[in-house]
Length: 456
Image 1 (tube, helix red, strand yellow):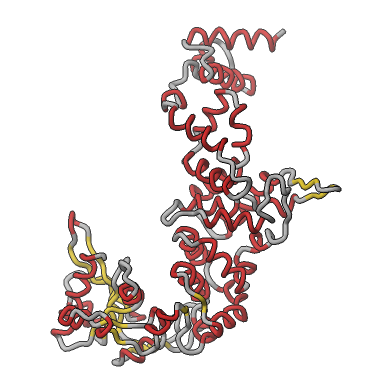
Image 2 (cartoon, rainbow, N blue to C red):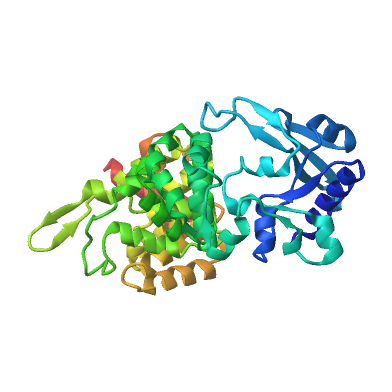
């Protein structure tokens, strides 16, 4: 349990109560406490107006006072602040943009407040002072929406009319998938039916919000289940049509006995561990994204995907741009797609080629992707074990040694920059990485022999 965050939130509730206001823990922290999980953060709901909250506590931030949300900061250890979101009870008006209410009316009623929330399992309130006094967690819960029953039934159910909840904020459809996947729950049938009916409306949600929600699905440890639900609800076709096209794309059974590209990809997603790097997770999702466009089948059973890596890189770049990834994350995701097939040649690589391969940024992610790829096909880790052993045993000063021959050395020797200049530098570096030269003088001599051969 996040003890310090809980104590900070309890102190906020105590202060509000002392001033005559109602105040409760609200939302996901209540759900997690009832499930015996450690909440990531604690939110407080109160009938105190935002101006009151802003004045009551010494360090506050008005990040959404128009919507009744104030951040209250408390000093933490090592100078870090613990921030608690404090929201005034409210009743939202009509939503015009699929995200924000056009009008917010503050309320004195906790029961009215929870009706605007997304799902029953997130719509419960908790009186932390009563819990502290009695030691009975469930007796301290205020449940106006049937959240405890749905926790017991393992259901994600929209509060009230599912269509209205999703019309208010289309992102809630992705959140329903994420909660169901993370908790191992089913989506309640009427809620799922509304999601299928309104799936096309997800286009109203900003690319950044979609990206972040998908990244959470991919990195919380239940990615396969999440993408199966996205597929089942029709959301996958709307947000990642390129992934939807993996369905039914056959693969050579001698290399992929598991089935088509969709099944293979799901098997990789199943192996993503909680908290894995987001770029690795997206690399796993997109590594074979070029296969549908490059599929060819010659009788009797010759299936090929010629050029699928190059095509996959372009598609991955398009997806990363569309979802507005940072340039660094995009580069790493595309690199994972670009290099995932190179492990097939790793035992035959020249030493210089192998060392350059190991220089790839975040190379352990490439290793991890290859491991998942192998386990999700022919289940042969021989190449993975070889690559891992060589990578971990090779000193960094051998992978990235100080160059024996530099561009300045070539210029001093009378060579002019140009295409041949670059080739000579690479030849010298290859010879160094392979141990064929060990001094600058040997490198210059090698370059001269190359230049003489080209000149003749």
